[in-house]
Length: 466
Image 1 (cartoon, one colour):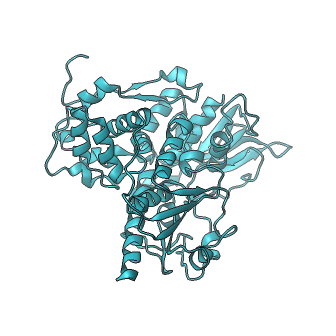
Image 2: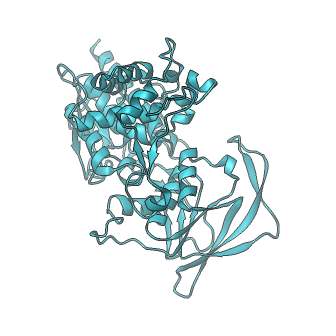
Image 3: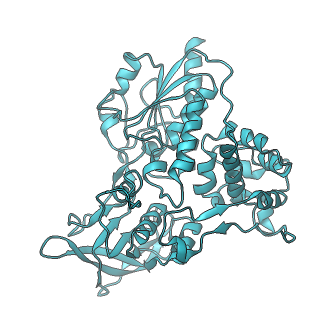
């Protein structure tokens, strides 16, 4: 390899955009050993490492990167796994640019160290070499139930297991992983190679996972506490209830929520020719929204053969999706219709989508989110032909668990009320975290909430013994 410029990241290899736009193989190849060593060599190994402060799960980043630089990859993995139960996931989908890498000292006069790509390298090396996280030396005799096998639930369960608790996860779907399995596409996060291996690592700590169990229907929180011997419950059931715009035509055939579209493609493997999955292969798709899920839906539809327009009411500067995902979407041929907002979905005589009526927007004064409020431009309405519309406008928690649990309060957005530092809810012994508390957010923030919940539960159970 040529001499490395310490002010610039070692470039990461990726599939050619024209090739990957028609397959579901992983876009980014990650670092090989030579590249990882070169990138690790850029780290200043700061004594007061600001990058740790930017990490929601507080990985000792400088320590693991130093271990990489010494070719001690097993040590690097164990350093990461003390703090994170899902390093191969985080190395792929975390918004490092606004978190750990955003705090990197190296980034002041150059480009930040590529922390995420190094984390991915270490986690992949551990998987390929059969290295597992270190379990608790002995069990403490206390049982905790976790509802939801997504990022928050898996993290909470993993941390509690490392403390010595007997933990059982109850998952509504037939596969663990939550949004990692049903939401994020294969080309960003391989399911069998990465997600299944991360779940298996959590199980290797002694965690038991029960699938096809709907909390609030199959079993209630109160039953877990009162009849099944669990001393505490953590709720990490996510936010899977999609939002819509409530515009004319939204109930037409050919209108999907991004959740439904991605779930059919991921869990039901619609992207594979040998699976007969009911999914509509549209000719021209409009995806409404600008977040990471919108990018995922758009790039999935593209790979299924459609021309794809991403319709977003603000400008590119306000897009909430990761810059890397926007860049990849543009490379692959997604068409961005910015400062544009749908006002009606047009249908044919069979009530099937035939187009979308939009209005052009301009940006006014900042709203409560700090972004400039989009304002319709009078007389700018226009129609665009399409035969499918995917709504990606965010999600809310399902109300099933709160409605079947005595003393568990929610706020006006139907999110469970829980303390940010401990996950403690209004019901004794019940803790919650992730999207079910905050509404839709990132994987790493859900993981941070899972860690907080584990700490809160540990303190609660210990306090009962005092």
